[in-house]
Every structure is written in structure tokens, then in C-alpha cells.
Image (cartoon, helix red, strand yellow):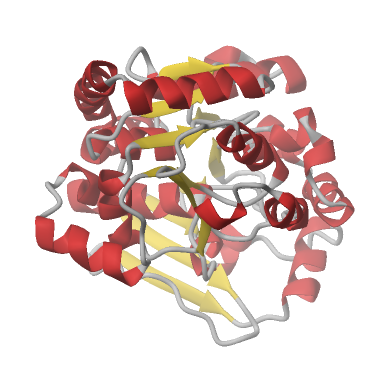
Length: 374
């Protein structure tokens, strides 16, 4: 088959959930599939950069149209059909919701990560809410021949919110990058520790800085810890509506023990996880929730929320909390920090559980879905 692929999400300067999932999936998919031909589409009027996929059956289709005019021609005027623009394909793979128009006779495979914008619009800026409305996610789901949801929770959301036939939706979990399954050397740890000037004992959070991630509750819970030798380290890209987080930090009585790293290099993440005493991810809602699984693969005890898809991601290997209960979160953190036997058991269970999310295995499942559409 000739398969068109929209890789515009891989043009992001800072990778997070969707871009990380897409990059990791394609790295494994192209390694195991030498039969299908992949045409990778992207467009930008500005100078842009996309990852290199050095496989003989993978080629790039770059265009340099002004984005606003290009999006207008697709979404409202229906003048541009991307599958024909790149030379015609049998199937088009859509990794995320972006402005896109495809011909009626082109088969469509859509990946849906989450519907947080439908369930929690208050967590988004007015501009992002308008953007999602103009994109038309429900229409994407209706037009798709097959949908891949990244969790059972996301599948249920698509069925419940959009009335989609559940038989149309397959679940393929996110696979973790291979770097998290490799042992971190002492030298790597020391290099990263020095690079970020990390404290000896710290509670760790990694993810975008945005309201849905519930970082303010993490700061409030951390303030209640009585051990002055423990620090809180927060890493992640400033996404949107993050200013309140910094305002709370500035007023915090534990301000001197809270450190923001900003966006961190992917290669540094395994050491950052490994050096932490506990990883805490108190998110309000996730389509899957990759950071807790990454932390588990690095042998770090995990605390996360008992909601949305996080019980699927963490299984019984994580300590589950109510993200709205700050005392519950404080108690859980304190428990892991003071009970060495519990911390070791969580680390052991986490390592075992993380093996279920092998990137190559998830790519095999995805390829089977692709081939079923031939």
C-alpha cells in the first residue's frame, strides 16, 4: 500500500505527549514494515525541521504554503485534498487533530489521544477552545474508516461523546522509548545531577505546565511535608495558563526547596527519573499518561491519580490518589519517602509493569491495523 502520513506534529520544537507518541511509533513502525510505502506530508511557509527516518520505503513530501491560507483552503473551501497533493495514496494516517482535507475515496486511519478539550474546556485558553472547534474532531471521527485510541478510557470517551461505533475503534497503548529500558550509569546520573544542579533527595514531576496537570495541588501538597531535606523538582514545557503555577510558587513557604527545570532534553530524562525518590503525576485527566510508565521503567516509585486512563497506565504498580485531595497526596508522598519497603516494592512492581508497554510490540499491533485496511 501507499500510505500518506501527516507528520506536522513532528515539526514542534518541544516534544510532549502527541509528538513523542508519534515519533516513537514511527521509529518502530518503519523498522518492522518494509512492505508498505510511506509518504510523509508536512507544510510550513517558514524554515522547518522534521526528524529523519532513513528507510528506503519512506519519503518526504514537503510543501511551503502559508499556513493560514492552506488551512482555509482545506477546512472551509475544500480546495486542497492532501492525499492527491502528495500523489495519491491508498490510506492516509492521521496522528492528531489538525486542519486537513482528504478525498472521499481515500481510506483514513485516525489516532485519537484524548478528548480533554471536550471534557474540561476550562483548562484551555479561549484561543485553543476556538481552534478545537474549527478543527472539527467529531467530523474526523465520523469520516475515519478506523480509529486507534491510545487507551480504553479514550475509546469510551469517543463512544460516549461522539456516538461512534465501538467496533470502529481499536486500542493501542503508547509504547515507551527504548532509552527508558536501559540501565542508567553512575556517570550519566552524575552528569545530569551536575547539569541541573539537582538536590540529593527530591520529589519529581515531568510533563507540560498547564492546568490539567494539577501542578498547583502538587506544590500545596509538598508544602505540608515536614522533612526540610526533601525538595520538589518540576520539569516541563510552559504550555498554556501556567502563570498561576509560578504565582503560587512565589508565595509558597517552601519556595526555596522547589526547583523548575523548564523543558528538558529527552536523553536526560532517564537519569532525572532514576535520581528521584518518587515520581508524582497528579493529573486531572489523561488520554494515557506516559511519564508514570517511563518513571516505572527507570525503577522509580510512582504516585498518580485514580482517574481517566491513569489506572490503565499505572496498573497496580503505582500508588493511586485522589488528585483533588491535597492531604491524600501529601500522605502518599510522605509514605513513599519514609517507608523504604513500600518504595522498593513499588519500584519492583513498576519495572515489571512497564514491560507491557514495549514500543516495538505496540508498533506490531498498529501495523496489523494498517494491513487490515488494505
